[in-house]
Length: 368
Image (cartoon, rainbow, N blue to C red; front, side, top):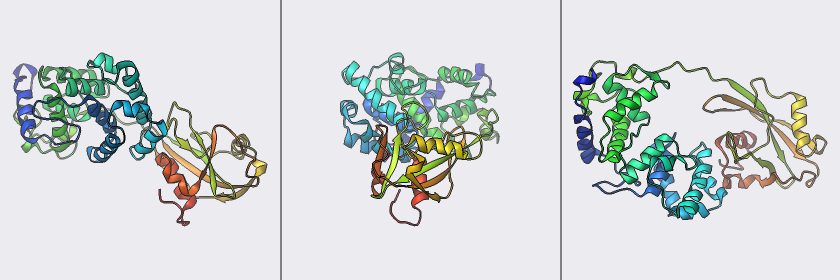
């Protein structure tokens, strides 16, 4: 379908008509012409990154119960926020959530700015989230485009651009059909349609409110759009992770640096994650000595290997178990001794929960 034949005004009209009758009822939404609370929109959008609506709903309600306003969230201890976030993954989002709440409270008096430009300056808010908040909470005519909307636009216009390089061109097409009014409702409508109708696989073209405008309806080609560049093979990294336990059943943990993967989260110490077999004896010895000394530890063998996949690589960790001879021989400000039957009270990343399960398997001491 060529652009000069496309009836651009009909597209948003039909989308909004569908939304008024079929849009999902979600706890962070307002319908009937009312604007949603910016705090609710922001919180839900951060949670929905890399996570499904079904999973997010209970977390959203829990956060609102714990921290009803952005001020409450800003003044909450970071560890409390990380603990409440546990299970949603991508913990950098939680750290930025807390940091952003602080900026909104201290710099803006608890009121979110209402423009894309100002929102983009806040921690953890990128182009999509800024556009979504501005459109949904403040009715700004923003071009909101996420994976669902991207897919719809590519199919309707049968765009041949390949992701991710083709995103600017796709956004240009999306801008042509974004309405000046009700752009927030329009964006949420497209999200709903992408989730339930214009699905990645087996789209329900018969139920689509813009099927009459779509270039690929009934062509059998819908699943071929959007076009994607071939994925690069993920490398596999390996390391040794150490479980050091004292006579009182406490386990040694440390907090990762704030920046980077799993930043700010608690972890069982490990050698460096590298693209080779598990760490050499020398590397393991260096780690143990950095933790207080290999000569203070009794080697109790290994636990089953732990496998985990991150966005860009696979990881294999081999847990090695040690018992500490002298309970006070390891002292450091960045290390913590945690009772192993209370590990579930901490915001451990999924990877570290897997390590704990591997070491404690068969002991029935911990449900993680």
